[in-house]
Image (cartoon, rainbow, N blue to C red):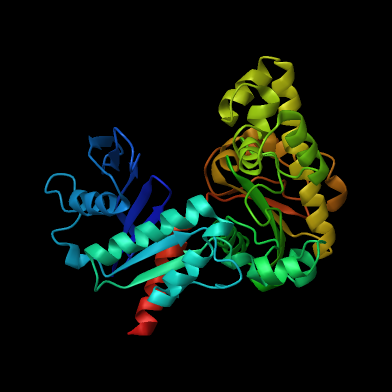
Length: 400
């Protein structure tokens, strides 16, 4: 079975084509700047090189059509016919409380995703355009949607509810949803395999630390809490997102700067976090270099960043009544060696003992804690696309 995985953003499409007989990646790449000037597709070739092709892409339909065209290209493609694609799997950021697991796309499912656009205006609208583009180009091919917040749907109500009037939940679905769920799901199950344990017997804290970052408490295979909230803004300090902030501080800043609600949301999402504190960048590689060079604001930013991760690790260990494993994943978590050390410094009382030599690595599956550490600290590169491909395969097979 060959499955195409699509991750459609507001102006982009990332894709991977899998042969599910051995879960090998046949092709991958991304379309950028849909609806804008100088749109292009960037294809990763078999030798690791990348080829960029410029194109006129007014909508996602043309973007998806270009993906198919490249997949069929005699020189750089992986298919002889689009008929070889058995199913298409999509990442959907926000499933709200309508969708608690992956499902096959129907007109009703599309309407449900559309009804949740207010909760994730940029993401869900882009996802929907991708779904409908495939509908138009391949109307007989089954599609599956995998929701970013679905893995977090096991949270108890006392963890996901906000302490605001209850009717806001009833009328407007205001509650904590959490995101990065596909990643948290993959790495929590993978770490159980690495440790040779049943996930149902483990208390795991998963740290998805990228430009967007979140932590989840996974107890006996189920999420009981996660750091992101109604939107991805809550929780940790991130590349350009503020993370947790006093709501009154938000209204105070709005008043001082004369910002309207959407302007304030953009300010907290796009101009805050590490970018706002350091004034350097939202890219942790640049901030790490500035930190090493002694830049005071970079030093402050790194301390704030790791401190907030530490607080969530401690909180989730308390919420679960202990912790057996801590997992680091995503771009920063997989590659920033110093952060993984500083974020657990002072947590030795929980049974965490790091091994600096083992931790001196990037982007590989590896236990990086000491042999005598009661809590295993493990580096697990994430693979959200394979989770989507597996769910797509299983649902399509079951439907047949």
